[in-house]
Image (tube, rainbow, N blue to C red):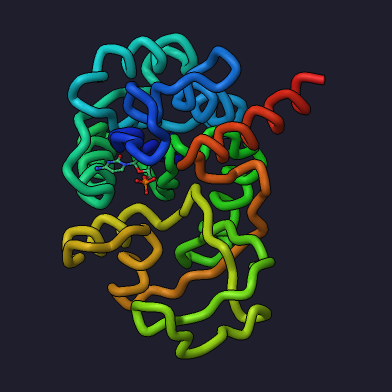
Length: 230
Ligand code: C5P
């Protein structure tokens, strides 16, 4: 399999206010992790998938992987303290799988309803460009910088802003080198790749790929799931 996908699902999800780690919260009776893996399972291309899970949910994650992915296509590893640590654990597991992976996609389980087409689009663009690839949407809000308090220090030109989503895609070998050399503190994968001097381009994102962070996000995701079921 030439395509590898790391699904990071090891966050606690405190902002969602749930008793479960976020990826194991139910959206219309199905966990966020299972929604995310279902979209991946629908890809035309075969992919080796590594789910990075919290240590208290490793067995639950394995059950979901076994149910959704074909035998031999998925595995589960333990997450780290920060998202970047979890990504590094997933990349290491992909490397150890021995598959001839050329392209890796890194995806947040919290973006549970990301359509399959977004995964396909990101992977195709990585192969076309050899760049880092990130799905993006235009910014609809006006965004300002502040002094850290109430005072506004500047207003950004909205036409030059984009909202970034996942899956973010990279040539595998170059990404492994970039993450090995990265300093701590990156909250997204593209900045790790860009810090190593590589170009990054965007492709069209999708409203359904929203990151489910707050109870209100979960309500929006439920509406999207209901519409899909119609
Ligand atoms: O915390 P945040 O919403 O930014 O997390 C984004 C994604 O990263 C989620 O899918 C979460 O499960 C994952 N994550 C992780 N390991 C961490 C922190 C976050 O896998 N230590």
